Each structure stands twice: as C-alpha cells, then as structure tokens.
Length: 433
Ligand code: AMP
Image (tube, rainbow, N blue to C red):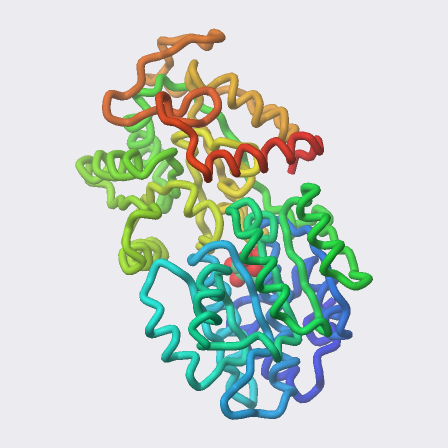
C-alpha cells in the first residue's frame, strides 16, 4: 500500500509525500501500513515491532497531522509527548519528526529534552512552548518541576521502547508523568519485548488498543548474518584489527562491557592506524554527539561502545556489529545486533566467544533460538578449550566478562540487578526475540 492510501488528510498529504520521498522512503514499512490508518482514526495502538522497523515515522506522521490541524496558539501547547529511554534516541526521534514536518504548511515546533546536559537552554527553548516534546522521563519531570512546561494539553502520548524505559528504572518517573496527563488522550505504545511488567502497564494505560505484531517480511525483519568466532580473550583486539583490515569493513560498531575497555580497545585500534573512538556514558554529551556525527560522516571507521549505544543509534548502512564482550542478556543481544541491518538492509553481527564465555554464549543462543556455527580464524585459533569452570587469564588491561557477562571481582550495580531482573522475567516467559 502506498503512503498516499494510509488516510492522511488531502491538504497535508503532498507535504508528507515530499518529506518521505526526500528521506528515501518509497513505500511504507509493515508497521507503518498497519499503524498509521488506526492512529489517524484516533485509536490506541500497542505495537511489538522489530528494531529498525520504521516505527518512528509510524507514530510521527499521524501525530504531525494532528498538530498541523490544530489552530496555532501562542505560546504553543504540548499536544504530542514522546517518552524515550535514552538521550541518543531522543535526539534521533526529534530529528526524524522535524524532517517529516519540513513541508507542512504550519511550522511545528519540536522540543527535545534529556538529562546529562544543562537544563537552562531547554527551559529557554520551552518559553515559547512546543507542539511536540520528545523527552527522557527524568529531565521531563525536572522541567515540569521548574514550571518550564505543563502536560495539561497532551492529546497523544507515545511510549517508545517501553520495555527499555522500565528496564532502565524509569518506572516511578513514568507513573508520575502518567498521573499528570489528561485522562482523555490517545496512547501509542511501542516495545520490542512484552514481559509481564510491560503487559501490565499496557493494560492499565490503553483503551481497546489495536495490537500490532509486525510479521517477518523483507523490510520488517532485516537479514542479519550472525557469526560466532572462537578466540582467546587476550587476542581479541588483534583479531578485531585483523578483521577490520582484511574484511575491509568501512564502519563497525564494537560492543564492550566497560567504559575502561571501550577506551583501551579504541586506543589500541588507533595505534594500528584505524580511526576509532570510544562511546560510553562517562563522555560529555558534546563528545558523544561528535563521535556519532563523525561515525555517520564516515570520518570514524570504528566506534567502541558500551551498551549505552545498544539502543538509540541509527546509522543507515551500518554493516557490521561486533560483540567483543558478549552482552549480559539475550535482550541486550537483540538490541546490539539490531544496530545493523536497519530498515531491510543486510548486516552482520559477530560475537567473540572464548573458553570462559562459551557457556554464556550458549545461553544466549538458547534464548534466541539460535544455533550459530563456531568459526576459527587462521592465526587466531584459541589455545584454551571451553571447559566448565575454566578461568582463562584475560587481557591484563581489558577485563573480560565472567560467565554471566559481569566483570570478574566487580559487585553488580543497581543497574546490573535491574538488567538481571529484566532478563529473568524475559527468560521466565520463554520468549526469545
Ligand atoms: P525506526 O525503526 O523508526 O528507528 O527506523 C529505522 C530506519 O528505517 C531509519 O533509518 C528510518 O529512516 C528508516 N525507515 C523508516 N521508514 C522507512 C520506509 N518506509 N522506507 C525505508 N526506510 C524507512
């Protein structure tokens, strides 16, 4: 079905068609075809969509139509509220909405707010109001507490990556925000997974929603080739360097377990003349933006990231993701590999597996219903065989995750515990996704 048949108002349709054509979208993705007509009719929607399925435009286009059809007011009142778990996702969703709104007859103001940066510019920006606010929950509450905005006029609420919002411990903030919203509103709920906590939230929030589960299709389920390479932990950086060079990867996102490892691995790659930068939560927002920008512009060949980057980064044509350290949970695995193969493009996800992490990898495979053949790269064949309880010595400066994906000798943080709880809920459901 073409974009022109989804039910957009005839006056706004030409503006939307021009914007999507400019972004290179020729036909709607599966989620867009299913969700847009229902959202335009005012229905609540709960969608379980693959990462990279095109869900942003699925909620943004109808939301823009609603805002564009509302009389201009000064100051502007917030009609659409999009809650997201991370700063990167906030920035990305905000950018998408602005680009889709580009040709509308009336200017739509989109405010993007997130923590980790000064609140003052965000407060200044909100003085003249905003039509749509894209926010992480904590900063949104701070801004409301500072009287920088009110949620009294919100007519559409979007929870994007709802599972991650709960997973990251935003449950309390979410509760407070929901209490401040008008009861009469449209709710759009997007989540990659549906553990019981998410089902409960969806049931409490939604009014006879249309349930959408995007079936596998060429666009909804990108082809991601998954590979597992056996290598001894201390040789992973050398192997990575070898693969980047021999397989001529132009752009690689490498996942590691700690900020420290991100710094060290990026440093070692730079010493081998590979343009690499670390990306983790301790970098300033400015630096993080710069790294993403340089990665997008192909100035950087490799970004070595912690799981902060597993969600929210959308770089078209990111061909390769490498799990240098395995993710802690099967859910994180899905999110990491979802960074490649976006919007129907093919991609490759490579996991380094050592004797120590073999058991953990098997667990991920089981949860994901995968059976990835083990590979060895000539010159990097492991000397240590996988044995239960084998405590292989790891790279002196790069700690390797233990069999649970945690770092040896490090006590789990509150976030670790939340992640583990989420993984348990997930596995209890027996859902591989
Ligand atoms: P999302 O799931 O919203 O993060 O979108 C994933 C990627 O798909 C982004 O790079 C979008 O720009 C792209 N995309 C969204 N809709 C379409 C479409 N109809 N055709 C092609 N690409 C799309």
